[in-house]
Picture 1 (tube, one colour):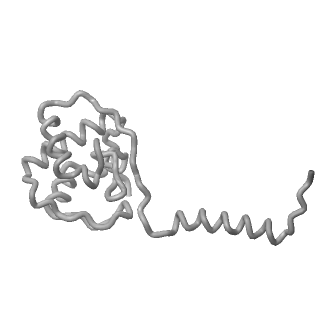
Picture 2 (cartoon, rainbow, N blue to C red; picture 1 turned 120 degrees about the vertical axis):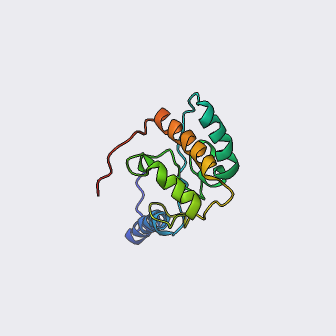
Picture 3 (cartoon, one colour; picture 1 turned 90 degrees about the vertical axis):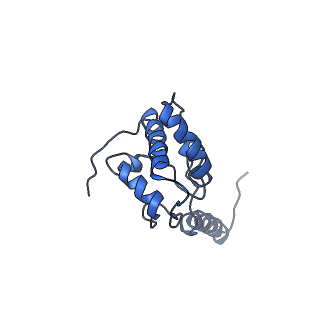
Length: 141
């Protein structure tokens, strides 16, 4: 049995579908960027960093730095040490960061975290990155 639908109905159906798809891309809300993260055996410094990360960073950056709807995954190639050095993590924690790579808004400074604690958090993130194939790549602009 062949359906003979009016052309206007068919065009309207496709236009509605296109509008739904476009609204997903242009709605102004961040997509949830959650990545799968393999957990390595951590060094003692990174184990402490994991606890500090969970207490200070995970609410936005997710369990195992996998991302949430509030903040990006740190287990992402854009955070490889050649693009974001360890110093970039210190500066982000101490000063905050203006939104630049992701649509989550500005990151506020984390005054409750000391530079020594940031060092442990960075060690944790770097060990997670290596375990998930994220290594140093020279930054090219």
